[in-house]
Amino acid sequence: MEEGRRWEEMPTDCLVSIFLRLGLDDLTISVPFVCKSWAQASLDPGCWRVVDFRTLDLMPWSRFCKGFVSRCSLRSFSFSPLMEFVVDRARGSVTELVFPSSSSVSWRDLVYASVKCPGLKRLALPDRLMLEDELRIPELVGGWRNLEELELESKPSSFLALVARIGHDCRRFTRLRVSGLITPEDACVMVNCLPELKCLDLSKSYLTKTELGVIVNGCKSLERLAVKDCLGFEADEEVVSMASNLKVFDHRGSKLLDDFGYETDEPEHQTGIFCW
Image 1: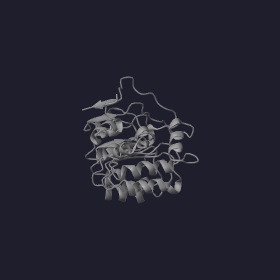
Image 2: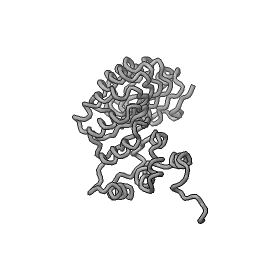
Image 3: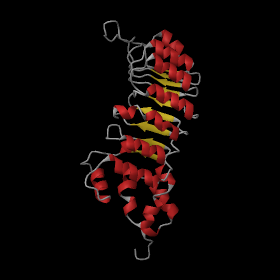
Image 4: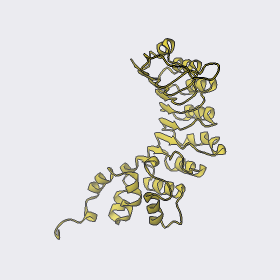
């Protein structure tokens, strides 16, 4: 309509209200390139509170990656330019950052995030890092003093040092997810260094009844424990009784290994979830 208002002339607060409902793909390769008013409105901090790279198809031939390469005049796609583009637009407003699980995330990307996202409350780290990068992860924690939740696809080689550093620097930390071989040292460091831990997810780990007991009895603030699809323990009456103080104890799919390495059958009456 000739007398209708043009989209680029919409009030900024209206544009922001719309952009808050968009995904990371649109905020990255669409909205900023429409016009100056849209690009400016998309810089509102609310648009960038949650940055989840796992919502994007990061295969080089995907529509998103081809669009990003074209918009930014790049020769080919790599994660670092995307990371910098998004974090720079967020201007320190990111509180939840989820790295891609298996993309080529570099140590430089992690350092960049630690500098540019000081207000992080939730962080999900990539699964595949170089060993030398894994060992340096604890160095980054000092930049995330407001961190409340950490998700690790697999247990890094620096897990003990990482938890100790979180306990020292992140006073509000309450939620942890990690998968791997849970050793006696791992159980002890979680008990001793994370006194405010409320939610713990160790699903798909190797976890014995002994380490499970150390965690359940030692983490005094623990309310929710997920140990789904674990090997190393069976949720018998002793284990269920031990976890009776928890609000939620989810052990679905967990099994015990016998002396020969074969899985034992779970009792048919087990449902896998106990809530008190």
